[in-house]
Length: 512
Ligand SMILES: Cc1cc2nc3c(=O)[nH]c(=O)nc-3n(C[C@H](O)[C@H](O)[C@H](O)COP(=O)(O)OP(=O)(O)OC[C@H]3O[C@@H](n4cnc5c(N)ncnc54)[C@H](O)[C@@H]3O)c2cc1C
Image (cartoon, rainbow, N blue to C red):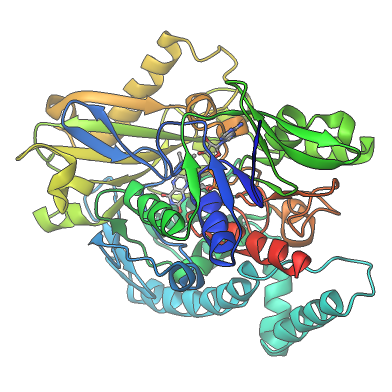
């Protein structure tokens, strides 16, 4: 005897939760099966040392779509909001960036930064409109697709002749050339480059890094926040909305396979041998895992399987968590600055040099780092007087050529701490415990192939109409009843909920 549902969602990542909540609100009987003990996928808060908790992967909120907040009536509490980015400089002359203003640079750079931001924000607003739309299918005569396509052309044209040309010129370009032409401050150039490359397998000189920069801005105009209680609190709030709408969420329930009969999905089978029936199976897992591990390539055409196989998704972002006996001393910073976002990317060449080793399977000896001290404003994360450091560290290869042995990981940890110590000389003496998650750990612990931030590189050949691959950008997989709702689908990764919301809308539209 198996249980029957209107929809089964594989994975309780934040996108799976958003999708399930919206389907349940529309009257569907929904089951979510999550492999891990906690809900949230890469948006979880967990204890990494006794008394010390941290957002285990995603730690900064800047892409959550207002449409998702509205549709799910989410209440997110923030420990820090509209944060300043402090870019550390070796000489202690750190710069501060917020919105379109930057302090600590020449007047010329401050003026250039304002005009740069004005243009980038206008382009990002255009992109934002399309984050919440289903990409139109190319080559069809369906009115909806034709209208969306025409509207995209019209929206680009509406930028005006000069800006339209600039948009089309810049969108595939690299961020290095753009910042090098505009600014003199190396620290400013390095910080902008960092924003363009976080979570990617790209360096500042790689094509597409303007696109990735715009994608980051498109979320919330670049405004960054730390949720109170860590990122897990956002996922918990989504799960609570889903449960209130009637969704059943079962954790510790890895799905082993998607059951197919007569060319359409019929349900799923879990690793523990339980079966659940549904004609709609929605995968929050990445596209490769969904097609090769869960569905089985034999159920799709060879050409489609090959396109999925070719998705580039080798993660380069590692996550470092430090339990600290107290805040470190960072010369040039005041105590209140520990509530802000602090980055180490002292110039654009540093960022490019940090990228070089991962091309050959090695770690950056001097990596690029984005740090926060979430316990500074959130006492729930560390014992009184103690603190937590949460850092995204680029670049660490997914496939280390030496293998991720204990020695390789110890060496990388040492290099990361030395890099931080160049700005915070007493950091080492403050550390009581540490956790380093490499992309390989992220793959194992969060079930993301390659440990990739976006479930697939965010480049023009894997974007919009062709995300995850051509012919499947409308959340439907080429087998009846199977959908994708995670970061591997349009528009991509980040805690936005956009893919989950778009997928739910497509499923409901199809059934109406
Ligand atoms: C190191 C790192 C740092 C990041 N930092 C940020 C940040 O600061 N801000 C930001 O906005 N984004 C950040 N991101 C990106 C962000 O975390 C992801 O893009 C986002 O979490 C993707 O959400 P999702 O719901 O689509 O998928 P996921 O979060 O990957 O969730 C997928 C879920 O499916 C489950 N699953 C997979 N297979 C199965 C199966 N067979 N059976 C059952 N369950 C299964 C997984 O366990 C997981 O819970 C970061 C990513 C990384 C790797």
